[in-house]
Image 1 (cartoon, rainbow, N blue to C red):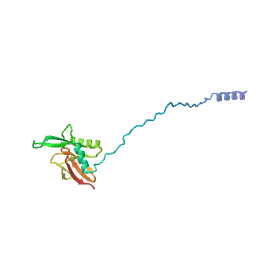
Image 2: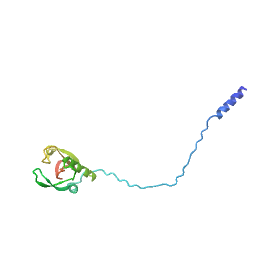
Image 3: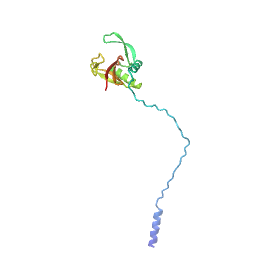
Length: 155
């Protein structure tokens, strides 16, 4: 009798074990959409290839206007139009315009009218300007006039 009770209990325990049923549900796809999207390719900014390319770019991106010089005489001035007439704003304006056109120019501090010992302006106080690299040559761009000055050959 004891064996019968143990057998019945083990049968009862086995039948109480949970049963796992796995099902896979397939969802039909009604349509496939293929869409062509145009993506702009990133083109890194580059240096100007030669002096004439730099001069041509400056001519397209500067404005001629009459302004008084240090003696109060009206003079034809050529620079990038900005909301402010500070040299730093003009230099930053040149840099932003150049980058927008795919070119690299930097903004550079001019101390006592000189960069790397080369006199580039008559301003004796701190001044801002731009540098452009063409091959191994570095040129200074005066943002208040658009004038280009050779500075140094690198390397």
